[in-house]
Image 1 (cartoon, rainbow, N blue to C red):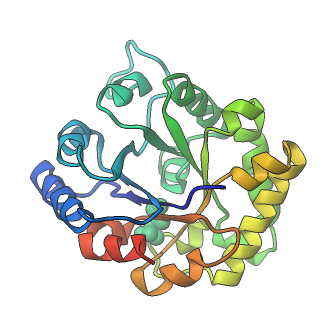
Image 2: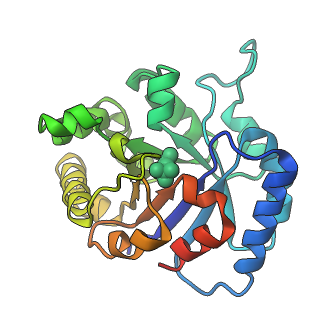
Length: 250
Ligand code: PEP
């Protein structure tokens, strides 16, 4: 059975005290959590260690939002997967459209980051998704297929089975424009079929594929209710403990 997962991507938001407060609020809301979803938060690098302490006795897991593509050395300003692992984090978000667009991260770099992440026993939450123009010109399936083929489909089957996928249509990220549950289901089923064709049935069936893009308490239940949607990667709504908690319970 594949896992349902709700992951919060805080992006470049919160000072350390603000982040600690948010994590404390969430920890307290989840003190009696008996649900079956895995819960992950991805604060900025600077907060990982301290927030790891706040959530230590809670059901919340810790993720980084990015990592370096090299193991160590003279790469000023970069943060290696081994450093992330040493904070107690277990996940790394990779391939987010903001990293692809603003930091020009190529498929080649993303594959390298994914391999290093896995080497350090961290789980990549690997994002794929099409731009608005690509959807409007009916290129959404071809775009996502190419993104997979150029990156995580180059992994061995056993490595691929360690990752989590997030389908995030770029036109829905931070725009308030959410994919309809039908659009999300259609793409998730398509992605699962690609996994089946590339690897096998059980790899496809066990892969958690999260939806991301303007997911809110008001639309989460319908999105998560789709057969091939296994939870969400949440941006804006993960910055309010009440909203994130409501999405976890959707
Ligand atoms: C994201 O950035 O991964 C995301 C889904 O953002 P938002 O929920 O704000 O659209």
